[in-house]
Length: 118
Image 1 (spheres, rainbow, N blue to C red):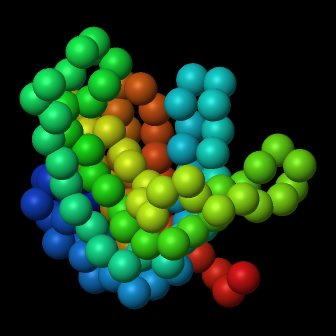
Image 2 (image 1 turned 90 degrees about the horizontal axis):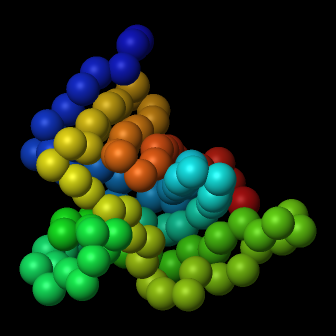
């Protein structure tokens, strides 16, 4: 099935169904690529109205749970916090293809999918 575009509400509703699952998050932002594996405990959103510069996002989604980030040496390190944060913009595009969520922002592309056993 081809990707379908979602509203933020539809995205949130579908992603909420993945609570309790092990997920994989991939981020491609300019020359920076991260790969994260985590157990998704909950999803929350935040709004920061006290931004100092234009780089800090006003809205973010927080994927809460324990996880690890893949390092350059093919190893894994624990996430520094018990969540992974994705900046959201008014122009963010939310896509879903039954197996993978894709968030496209002006700063990068984030994919979220169910992870295999580790």
